[in-house]
Length: 132
Image 1: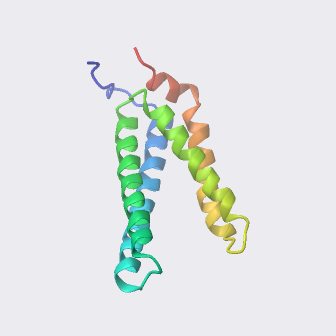
Image 2: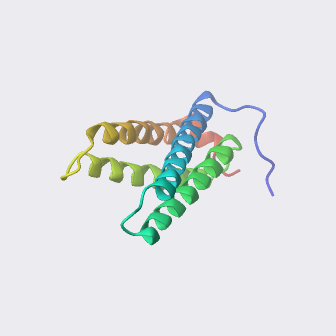
């Protein structure tokens, strides 16, 4: 098994990891809010509320795992991070339209997702996460 490359981390790799940690922290905050709402408010469907809460918690754990392994320079994080950012862009696009449109939420999701995608494809990040 390859040893993690921790001796020299490019700044852009650290920035990507920080961005993933920030997204993880925000998703943890969303999960806490969903739990609070589930316990305090009476949802139309408890099963749906619990399912959404579980998905949010699993996504937060996954984002935290990606952020840690980004610092370790693991190659698999590039694909995982691209998938997450594309999903985040899709949710952002949905936030800009429809009956309950929230452009503010859309921008808060879109900007970091695009920034993360740009960071993912910079030469220093690709080099730091390349399989040797």
